[in-house]
Each structure stands twice: as structure tokens, then as C-alpha cells.
Length: 390
Image 1: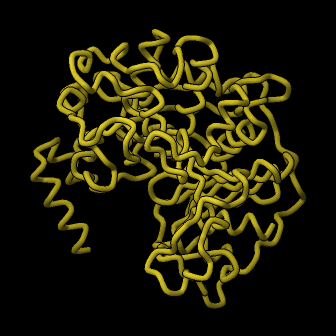
Image 2 (image 1 turned 180 degrees about the vertical axis):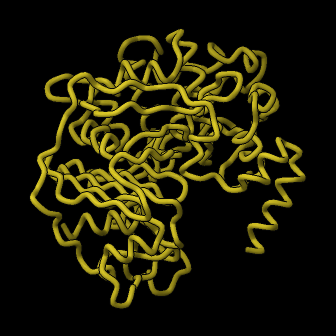
């Protein structure tokens, strides 16, 4: 409580939409109700996963849930469902080989409940970038962003590339972890144009990995300028209507109509599973190559070239449970990870408050956990550990 109060006071000092910040405080999965939403229409041919007569039985909590410090969770005598309810989960879905093995909702949420997915949006925008490159709308990942952001054209910022935005190596002074107040200023702003123009380079582009939602905001602008279309229409026409989605989605926009490309996507959980199916099938949807297969392969690459982190590639995280240094879990505050794990078969999209969309390409296994908070659990490690047990 004191931490939240202190955070609110710091936000007040930001002088950015002060009343709004203090009222809403931390971002929430219901934030799509706060911002203007623009529609992403669903497919005219909805796809249905094969359904079982009943859910599979989940392994005991102690076998797969880890805390934020990498410690094994005991959960006492709670069933997995009781534990998921108690840890602020809203849904857990599991698909293997197009069969829906498990689908359950918690804390008042249902199959038809919309939520905002935060940084899972980055994975969608990434695949849209791959499509733009394949179509020749963007020349490649080495194309400079000055073509689309004239505010940067006259200085070093204009030399940042599309690939550097994708891989979080652009070098801007807006890191999600080290510049939280700055990012909150962006999140609750009305018109981000001034914020964009004021950003400077902290690092030489292509030199250092620094996770930054600001990068994906710029990437969304580049896509809109390249196509001459809004981001919601691009997602709709290039991805959402092609993957059998059953319901409309939406994405938030600022008052100046800039798209919240870094985290504004809102939809039903089951349609996220269809997006993950597209990824697990190397960009192919029932014979239609929606996203180039070589682009999906790069999303799974643990390369460390040009400042890239092996843990992250083009909107997806790669540091799953089997990358842990198991012998060090009990002695370290946060267990180390090694990149020589799983031969790049596993990847996941991760979002604020424990949104995890996990994909094992080899097993054709998809697991989605959404929630209103992470309850101090490492859901990325937990969900990827659960995948090993299924």
C-alpha cells in the first residue's frame, strides 16, 4: 500500500494529466474502457478448435508454479483452479494439435470477456512488420525510420532502423524498467507527438538491448506511414480476418489518433490462441502463408548480433523454463538463464500483470494465461514449466 501511495505521489510530480494518473494509478487489463478504441473486425470464416468433453487435469501447483524469485510454489492443499483464482488469473487455455485441452475462466471473467493484453500487442505488430517487408512496403529491417518520422530526419535518431525497433536495440531514453515514470507519462498522455520529439538517444543504436514500449509505438507509426492506413485496419486485413477469429477486437488510440501499438490490443482469449496457432504453424494458416516462414524463424532466433539479446527477438521472449540454470535456483535471488536451451522451439509473448502467450512449435502446444495481476509469480517460467509436464 505504501509502495502504491509513493508511486502515486511520484506520478503527481510528472505533471502529466495529473488527475487521470492519480485516479487510475497502475495500468489495468480493463484500461481499454478508458481509451478510445478502434475496431478490428473478425473473420468471416471463424475457426473452431476441437473440444474435449471435459478439461484435462492440471498437474499439482507445486510441480509447475514458480515465484518471481524462481522459487517453487507450494500452494498448500489448493487445487490448480483454486490457486489460479487466488492468484488473480482470469483465464487459462491450453491447445495441442488444434485440440482445446483446457479452457477455464476465473474471478468473474468468461469466454466472452474482453481484456487488454498489454505487450502481447508487440507480437502482433511484429508479424505485421514481417508482412510489410514481404510485400515490399518496407524495404527490410535495415530501413531507417527517418523515412516515416521526419522529426528525427535531421539527426542521429533518424538512423535508427526498423530492426532495432523490433529487437529493442534502438537506444532511446525510454526504457520500460529504468524510466517507468517517463513511460507512464506517455501512457496517459493525450497527444504523444511532443513526447516523441523530445526523446534522445541514450545508447548508440544497435549497441545495447533495452526493453522499451516506446520502440513499438514508433514501429506502429512507421507501419501506418508506410501503408497509408491505420494500424487497426492493417491488423484486421493482414492478420485478424485471416486466422479464423470469431469476435471483433480493438486497439486503443490517443486523442491525436496515434495507435497504442505497444500494448493497446483488446480481445477475447480464444482469438489470441488462433494468433498463436499462426505462429506455431510458421506463419501458415490452413495453406495461406499469412506471414513469411523465414520471419517467424527470426522471431525464434537467439542470435546476439548488433546488440540483440538472446532472450528476446522481434516481439517474442525466448527465456523459457528449460533455459534456467537449475542447480542455481535455490541459491540465487533470480535464477540465471542460459541461451543453449530447446533449440529455439519455444517462444512466448509477455505482457504486464502476467499476460503470457506461450508457444512450443515442435509440440504444437499453446498455453495462454491472462490475469489482473501476477501475484508475485513468474508466469513465464510457470507456464513454460507446465508445458513440459503436458
